[in-house]
Image 1: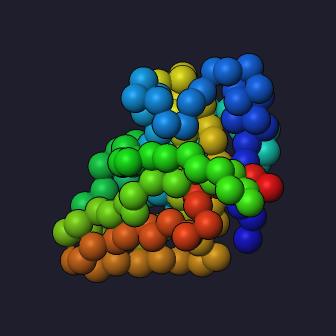
Image 2 (image 1 turned 90 degrees about the horizontal axis):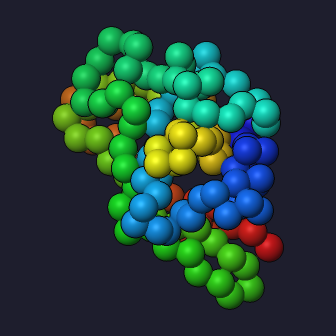
Length: 139
């Protein structure tokens, strides 16, 4: 199991190339199969999308994933990036990973989240319930 923040995202933050909450930055979450392996040096959606679940049989998932809604960044003891939970209704598929990327910034990768195994839905709603601590938390 491997999750992590891509190097390109760290550089994009330092170079002011991305804003996780700006209306101009479209942050998407795509779902990937067990063929995906988190590689710190991958840079764009195209470097991981061959493992997108759209390439498997099933229904209810659209290519390139789903746009995150109501994105926010808050600060307290830690700084966290969060958004509304993401759901795909009337779905039948199996996913192993979620990858966030910035469609408006050349589809630059942000982070990869390993589900720790197969997550399957059959004729139902597949929901990613983001952690209460945030999607990304920096301390």
